[in-house]
Image 1: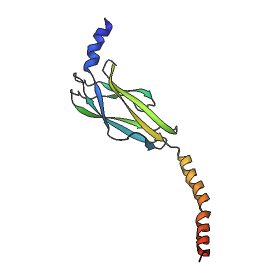
Image 2 (image 1 turned 120 degrees about the vertical axis):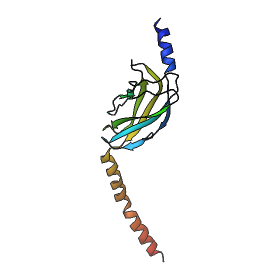
Image 3 (image 1 turned 45 degrees about the vertical axis):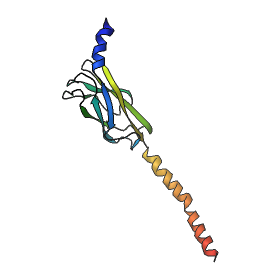
Image 4 (image 1 turned 90 degrees about the vertical axis):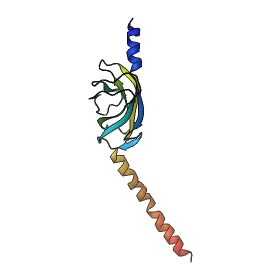
Amino acid sequence: GTPVGVLPTTSCNSMAYVADVNIPDDTPMKPGQTFTKTWRVRNNGTCVWDAGFKLSFVGGDAMGGTSLVLGKAVNPGEEIEISVPMVAPSTAGSIRGNWKMATTTGTFFGDEIYLIIVVSGSGTAATVPATTATTETPTPDLTATAAAAIP
């Protein structure tokens, strides 16, 4: 009996990912940088999303983000922008966080939405150009000397 009761509820609630309003995939971030990720989503189901439905973290790295509770109902066919304040982790590399909408009773539905940021350690980035610059400095001098000697 349980699955039958669950199915109608699940099928009428649906969410479709529309767009990344900001922070597109692979946005570079510094460790500890604060930002707010905003997605545009559409209620593509047949039921109204009630106030109290919430976007929750479901996998990857939450990056300090917490569940976002809808403050007002969203009608079928309506698009909304949902924003979650986050902080880039101190771990360098590609960091992904997955989020999903849930009903007031905690049943997840619709598309899983995510963000991917690329965290770069500031120390590494500063060191590399310095080394490259030192190596390349003699080369222009040699070229200039050789060019001057030709005529």
